[in-house]
Length: 179
Image (cartoon, rainbow, N blue to C red; front, side, top):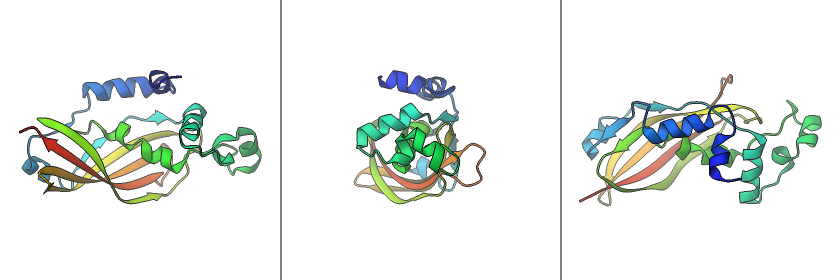
């Protein structure tokens, strides 16, 4: 099953992906490092909810060779997990950050962008199969680095109906402007 079918799983995933590709969410526009600096401390986006189904969890297990039973053994989870469900890998939740937040900020005259890394990641709550997640991002810092814009953001991955976020990560992105 390809990425297109993967995105179609769940009730909102395909509409979510298509709307973000079109930029339907009132994204912030950055034309310069000064524009990015003006966003410091500002929440720049809140994504739609996406469903975390067992198929997505199984695909992640296959891609990473992480077959721990709490993620992939639905029968055992029904007997031994507190809510009777498998849970998503923490790193699956983390890996969804680009998809959930990728269109919060549009960098005009962008040559390329790269994920530079993470300063801090914490997993605060499990993500049971069937849960809905969304991403919320706040720009913490915008600086010039190596001729590019280095954007440091806090991304919170929320679980619908839960008080604690599943994950909070401080992400680093490098944005290179066209000359």
